[in-house]
Image (cartoon, rainbow, N blue to C red; front, side, top):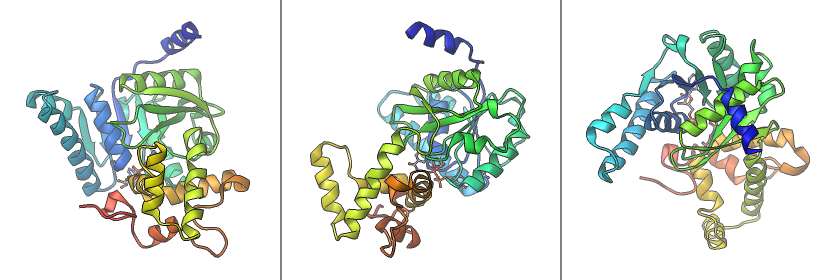
Length: 299
Ligand code: NAD
């Protein structure tokens, strides 16, 4: 099996220049990780302040490495220069692989993917960091669906080793191979999975969030649930994890999962008349760590 895997990866076109669409929690993290391991990356967003935040986060992570004496300030500057922030597609012509990390909304992703496909070379691989939306579904409007796959990082990108590489119905072996190779070059552990809403990890995780949501509707105290799950051995409980993920992302991803698996999932947006705690937080603009208030308050 190992030998076959090695041959498979040899088919990969080299990935030398990359780009990420979206400079949010995930896009910023992906840019940092790529830059840190030496692959140049364009970081594109539609908002100046999002780019600023993405860069600030990357700077903070590199500065920590300098503090720990793992990098010199010169090395930090060199690595940071691997991230090229932009608001335009101007330099996308010679990008080998683009990771799409915009909001978890199928319509927005469709528009962005169609747009970027018109800006890149014929062989460029497009990879979506969607948490839940089927890759075959996102490939529908693309001219070159064979060059498209999922590349699903976890949050925070610099700490989470796993990357799901998702093969859609029309994804070519070469696209999977290049994406796997890029994930490895970023120091990650890629696993190749088949396509379905939520792929592997979120098919397990979202029913867990659904269970938490039901407990909340029945009057549970979120801090207590978090403490219990920590004692159970998990690094953090569901309320804290939702703050990390972002309530907007959780609600949108929950809708996709409920549509994909209606019999199993129960919507995070609330069942029947009972509005779920997660939906209520979202509607009250308590998005989690990204705006410093969620289940918990942040500085
Ligand atoms: P986020 O809200 O932090 O960032 C999204 C960014 O996309 C924003 O900066 C926004 O300005 C930008 N954007 C919107 N439209 C754009 C466009 N047309 N072109 C370029 N940029 C655009 O969201 P996030 O948490 O980083 O999530 C991004 C994606 O990653 C989603 O698909 C999400 O499901 C997935 N994801 C999120 C997590 C998580 O824990 N938050 C984990 C894994 C995957």
